[in-house]
Length: 189
Image 1 (cartoon, rainbow, N blue to C red):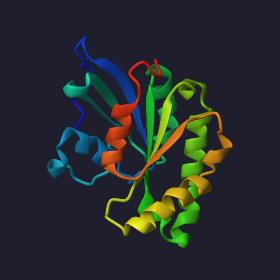
Image 2 (cartoon, rainbow, N blue to C red; image 1 turned 90 degrees about the vertical axis):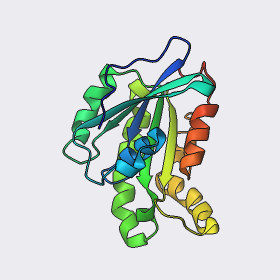
Image 3 (cartoon, rainbow, N blue to C red; image 1 turned 120 degrees about the horizontal axis):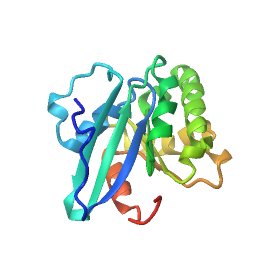
Image 4 (cartoon, rainbow, N blue to C red; image 1 turned 90 degrees about the horizontal axis):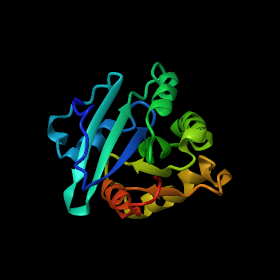
């Protein structure tokens, strides 16, 4: 996995660097390979260190270079070296929304995700980035239940403490892709 480290986009496409952040098992790599259309060959082992892929949406004139660092506690301290060496335009923080469903599982997950999200939102390297929170359900729930959690999860993560940041919350893979493609081309240069 991840063989596009030195690929670049054609001149006619707008190039954006995207950080896929999130805890181990949240679905970052699955999301990346869903975008590549290669989910069938994806196994569920943890990401070893980093995945890096370039995806061009020719019809939209956009090219995204996705950076997918491992989300385990062992590797999270090394994320900062990536932040300092790559200029990101978009940060997609992926959470396993199923873990928020049960109040017993939710408490430790909220603390971990809140800490990582707040670290990213406060970091000077990301002050010009668009931040997208992707609630990865991994399974279909009743639509009403999902919509309720769309309000609960951002509140529990205390995203309201960053009023100057435009945080977009999406709850389906399709909404994630549509949101990324709808961002203005000249935004977050």
